[in-house]
Every structure is written in C-alpha cells, then in structure tokens.
Length: 509
Image (tube, rainbow, N blue to C red):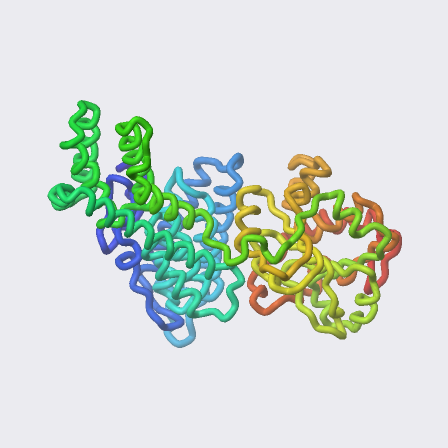
C-alpha cells in the first residue's frame, strides 16, 4: 500500500489490501440504524476527517483539467464549511466537533459521495464514496437517497449481491421510482442468477476443482492457483491446468470478488478452452450462454417491450417538419407561474413544451404537454403521455442507456435521436470556450427552436430564471437548480433576442 492509502480507515470487516477494496462490503462496512438521527457519531467524525484530507489532497494536486474531480473538490469544500459552522443541538448542547449531523451537513455528504462516485476508478475516490455511503446510512438508516447512493457505490465496486439488497431497501422506502431503479434491479438479479448457474456448471464439469477451491483461502492464494493453472496450460498439461483454473474461478465466486475481476477471468478461461478446441465452441454452448446472459443483463436489463410501443425516432429534419408553422410556448418550472392563472392562455398554443420535472396545475400552468424536454439523468414525467420526448445528454453512452431504461412504451409517439442529443454543442458548434456552462434542458430546447426558425410564435412563460423559486413535482424539489452563473448567461442570451417582454411572457417571435 502507498502512503496515501493510510488515509482510509480500516473497515470493520477487514480489508483486502492487495486490491484496495473492502470485501463483503454490504454486510460489514456499516451498521445502519433505522432512526432518523445519530448523535455524537464517531463514524461521522472519521468520515469528515477523511473528506477534509481528500479535499486538501485535491487542492494540492490541482484539478483544473479534471472536471469531475474539480466538482468533487467543490463539494468537499462546501461540506467542510457547513460542518465548521454547524450550530450545537438544543437538546444536547453538543459542539460541531462532537459529530452532529445537521440536515445541511447530511445533504452535503450525499452530494460529496455522489461526486466521488462519478470520478470512477483511478484514484482514492471509490474508497471515499464507499466510506461516505456507509456514514450517511449510519446517521440516517431510512434515507432513500442514502440507500440509492449505497447501492450505486456497491455496484461500482463489484459487490452486486450487496447492491441488490441496497436497491431493494431504496425501493421499499419510495413510492415513485424516479431513477428507474426497478429495471436496473431486475437486470442485476438476473445477472446474479446467471453467474451462479455458470459457476455451478463449471463445478459439475470439473469435480477436481473443489480441492483447489479449498486451497484458495485468500486473494493471493487464488491468484497463485490461477497463475499455476495458466503455466500448466502453456506447457500443454491441460489435465493439470483445468482443475486449477476452475478452482480459482469458483473461489472468486465464493469470496465475492469484484464482478469485473471474475468476468475477466471467465472470459480468459473461455478463450483458452476455445483455442484448445481449435475454435470449436460447440461443447461450451451452455457455459458461454450463461456467461453472455450475465454480462448482457448487467449492461442492459431485459425490456418487456423492445419496440417501446412502436415509437418513431426522429432527427433534426423530422422535428423541424413537426413544428413548422405552429405557434409554440415554452413553460418554465417557476414558482411565479405556479401562482398565476395563465393556464387557458398556455393551452391555446399549437404546441406546449415543458421541461424535466414539470408539474401540472391546470389554472396556473395549463393542461397540455406536446413536447417534454429533459436531461437523460432526470427520471421525472417519462410516463406522462406526450407527442414528442426530447432527451438531452453530453455522453452518448449514458444518454443511450437512459433512453433504454426510462422510456415508457406508449407514453410518446416520437423520440428525438442522437442528432438532437446536444443541440448547442453539436448543431451549433458552440464549444466550451465560447459557452463554458453546461446548457440546461430549457436552454437546449430554446436554442434549437430558435435555430430552426420555423415557428410564427415562440413565447416563454414563467422564465424568471428561478428568481421566484421552483414549481416542480414534489419528488424533484431536492434537485439543485441551475447555478447563478449559468442562469445569468442563459438570461442574457434570451434578452438579446426578445422581441417583447412583460410580466408573464417573453416573446422571441
């Protein structure tokens, strides 16, 4: 282990120092309580200490060229500021240093854990995310956000059995599956079953492997058995190699090694078997089938309706034809709109566009939604019937995955394709130097409709850029609003093009 690794606390269940991961993380890394609050938490103090150390390390290393770690550094600094300024609790008079977790500190911990998770592998961030996810559940064992974070962290760490349990705990605590956890959970359950069947088949086909499973009591011993099997295979001693290779695979499954490590080892084993058979994989059909299914379900859970209700995918040209000659209003999720009575006026337009977590209150907002524009990571209103679903995202891979997981069959007639995924960047060619902010769903939509320029009326209702607050679905109220810098940039762009402005409406045409 390097000196940096000594920052991390030793897990109660023991730590596999050879690969830097906690083993059996689902059952030993935390002991969540079911109560809403735990006072004088030593776990919280240790977590905050590690967060502060990691923040210092990021500052010293410099993260200007790494947007994800820059975001993490910002979250960690905010967490430290909140903790330092926390007030003593009235009932105990405890000082902040004793481990009091206020609502603000708890939310900041969740944000920091999510940011650490998004950094991926290649540093200490996975361990930080694991520590934070354990701490938030020790503090508040009934936190939905805490269980979802824990599940995502465990899944990323390769401990899918524990991740399945955490996802189940999350679903038991919520009535609205905004984030599409249920299909993800179904895919993981299927993958776990397929992996178990694959390992059972290997054990039946090679009974001698059991003696090498018993000899693999630690990660280093598993590696030694595997390497010995590879050496014997290279020498042509397949009879000696086979039980060692299979024994190592069975030991990895028994000890719940990270899923990625087991998958890579099984893939290498299959390659050896197929090469030894001169490319004939017919005798491995059952094994290959289980291997393929467990990988497929981890990547993409099964779809009940692969056609998604017969949806049509449309590009820029088809979208232009759909809106040409029609009056369009874009309805913001602002509190000023929610307090008004513009519903009938909004419904009078040919096309009504709403965004992400919009909330319908007929007298104030109107009732119709013809086009729903949303960022791919937001799980709100995908089940509401609309004519067109427009989904934005910077990462093509994540965008495609979200579409597959979130689209509800029959809830839309059209879905915009990859050509409309990131309008400002891809169609407008506006790079990060010219527009440093991440364009919001509202701005991407507005920019695109202005760019197409085929609508006689293009009006904005409730676009006060969150000055009055937000009017959203209840489940989305905790989602942070756009930063002030981004709001300022988008407002300036709108006002430069506005033809008329009054208290309720901004007209661009």
